[in-house]
Amino acid sequence: MASLSLWDPVVRLFHGSLASAFVANYALTEPGEAWHRGFGYYALGWLLIRSAWGFIGTPAARWADFWPTRARLSAHFRALRAGQPYHRLGHSPIGALVMIAMMLLMFGLGVTGFLMEEVEYFWGEDLPLMLHEGMANALFGLVCLHLAAALFESYRLRENLPLSMITGLRRPLDEKTPH
Image 1 (spheres, rainbow, N blue to C red):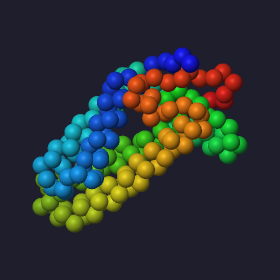
Image 2: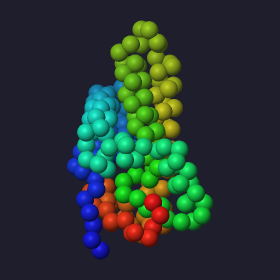
Image 3: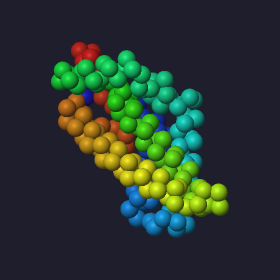
Image 4: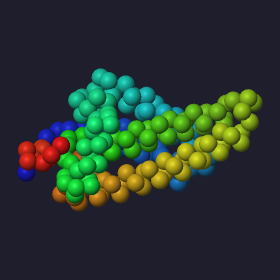
């Protein structure tokens, strides 16, 4: 079957970089270590790049293409409830909502990490640490949901969605499929 180019290199590098930084900081490094801080600032840098890319990047990378509006979310929920496919290029509305939540949590991790290291004089370390740990655990939960949903939707749509984020290629939309 033919495929088309969807995910550009910036989006794919962002996805891989954020995933790697999160796994490294959640499971492999110790809080406060230089590596932990470095991965955190690396993730913040990629968040800034991706945020700008949402305005100037390729069509599928633009915020306007996938922003989870009420109408888009309602249509997606209706399709799921009816057991119908909701195949669209790019992120589904629910997937976009989860993606934005993960990005906000990752940004919050960067801010609270900075507060713990640099401005503890004003805040103390307890509140930023508590927020940091809570956001890290919430992000872990969303990552698990994201992975499960990608696998479930891959099965349901009969398309390898995780592979598309690696290769950048997606199957074209079927004209008969509601989207």
